[in-house]
Amino acid sequence: MDKQALYINFNGELELLGDDKLSVARRAMHYGDGLFESMHAFGTQVQLFDLHHKRLMAGMKALRYIIDDKFKKQQLAFEIERLLKRNRQFGGARVRLTVFRNAPGLYTPASNDAAYMIETSTLPNKFFKLNDKGLSIGVFTDLRKPINYLSPFKTCNALLNVMAGIFAAENQWDDCLIINENNLIVEGYHSNVFLYREGKLYTPGVESGCVMGVMREMLIRLAHQQGINTVELPGLTEEELLSAEEIFLTNAVEGIRWVLAYKNRRYFNRVSVMLNDQLNTTLFAKHINNI
Image (cartoon, rainbow, N blue to C red; front, side, top):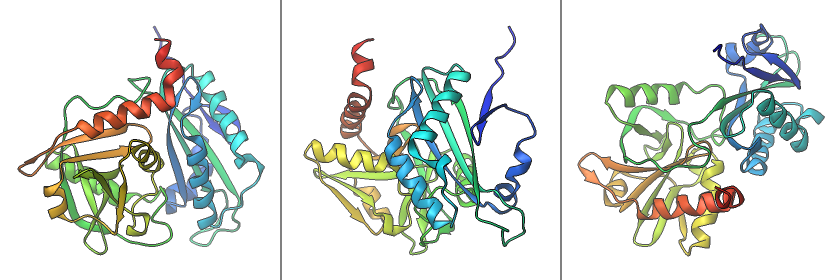
């Protein structure tokens, strides 16, 4: 059976993946002049889309992009749904929305007009499934994440994250943490990081330079509902990692991933399990009850 052809959504037009549409996105490729949202969808609807759109608008303003009607929340949600239907992805799906400056010019663009591209791919699970085996993690120290007004956003210039991912693979870790310019741990290479100790959660605050994670914000809300307060810090130290009872990583596509090992330290996952259950109940209750 032939593999199903996949489509992308390019500025509201459905195009076969592989058509030569990427050439118009050359500023994003040449200069990293873009930003993106990675999202989880189920049943053609994106979870936490309000938070994703809020962060996207803040990032576009920070990059001086012109925000016209095609970037309205309802319009983007419609275009994502249309693409998921066209690709027949009705279970769990990853959605990537990339926005870039759509203008000629070298380092100085001729205008601040913006365009977007939406891509989708199928996920193995419909809902957020906690990892069965805990992660082994380390810390990447070769490069440091700067703290500035672009730090909270997921920009197309992600070399630090790429190098951290390579470093993790070279050391046979499942993930690794990134440090900021103050030598404090602020996030994973594609996630936010939380510690649990003595009834409280600890996580780097946005002022630390970490990504303003959508799932991070959701988990802070859910923890509060469960009577667990979250302390936001300028960053985390290795001593705080080693004294934690639990460590878990969060992102909008995978939800929560719990950590088993850092160096010789081993961790539990009781709070991770509880929050993951609460997350699925909050976002998918109607669908879970129908299974």
